[in-house]
Length: 594
Ligand SMILES: [Zn+2]
Image 1 (tube, rainbow, N blue to C red):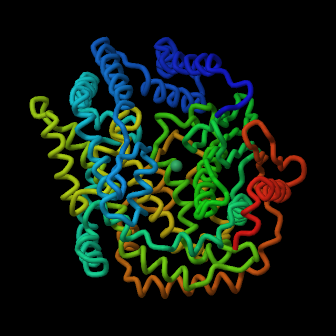
Image 2: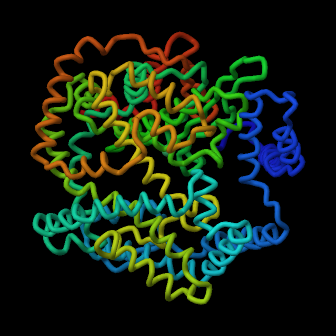
């Protein structure tokens, strides 16, 4: 991050201390001994905390020696593969036939935006090289050892182990739910592929063309309605109107790019909130960083969606009130699906006409015109199923990978299986080849992609619940924050867990119905509904814009070591205004952008 006073040594010390704590067999034994007591010396409340400690430590402590040895060996192999990955050059051939060295980000951007088909194809071929490279460097052996390790611990295979630890249900249950979604959306996929051919030509179905054919000019046209420097205030206002509170949390926001900054945006919690034994609540601390360039087209929209998303994670974590920070720390056994449901539910609002009518405004305060929303729905809605199919392809591929017999686990077979899954699930070879998805490689991130799928499922079910109950709205509705806090957030990673929480709030087990139903709505009907929402919002929104924003949070805007503004000096709105002034000073072009 290139910050003053940073110290690799301190980082290693605290990292090792955490590892030691999480891997301490003695703590685990002590916890089990306490849980066995029946003499009343351990209260019910303490038992809840003890169970959580056991659940957490079990994710990190390996109790069998054989399994321990396998674990060490597979981590070592993974380390070697990760290291050799740096030897794979990222290159593409430009339109003049020159080979260009580049980064994965550029490859992805070019596939979406380069007008030259041969360049896009060359980028796609680069992505396809990931597979053979990983397979030549020991990927198959890693899969074999992960499976042996999982079986040693009594699981069906590594996938079964991962899903059980992360979500609390088995691989079987996981794929029962995915199968239902797969079958229900197959007809929608076929329809979308047909339409793509009809509207954009047969060539558009080629993997290096689809993304480009569907990208269009909308980002450019809608850009003025998402001024970057207003994004924090818009996020704060929208959350405040929904009565979302942060329970005294501190959030440090470092939004803009600079030289030497860590090349990935993220959000983390150096202090996880909890209740001490005497009942005192310790609020959370959040650091949030992104890599925005404020005068770049599309940066305002990205910043806003990211703030709604990461600000959603932060709101979720701020409101976990349990007897130990182990309920609110972000690593396993925290359910990926549960965490992502909260952030994705909130960032999904940015696509609602009802939200856009209130919050998508240009620098003169003019609201985004209906015509642009209409165009966005027409261009995007019929093809949304592509994203879903691309998402579920990852768990289906990993399932097949970990279910292969050891003797069949050869580079040729793995590549074949990857292509087969792409053909079956995505209807052709994928623009993002399965073997290029970074998640499949690392122990930590492999076999958890289903978490995003279930989160999206839960988002749709939660939206449907709010639409069908109360006054049927989400945007600016104070009931939303209250219900999210009480039903989803307060429990953290303790009971009743992801599926239980969704059931408790929505009154139904998690199902794909709401998601599939929305994808199946005809464009004409969607336009009618959204137009009505847009007009209703315009009629009611005029009074809202100057209300005070109250998030019960201290927001500190920083740029590396420099503090730009601090809401504790006066108010959140003032801090946002100072932030705007700073942006105008550092990126003067933003002030004059239309
Ligand atoms: Zn997230």
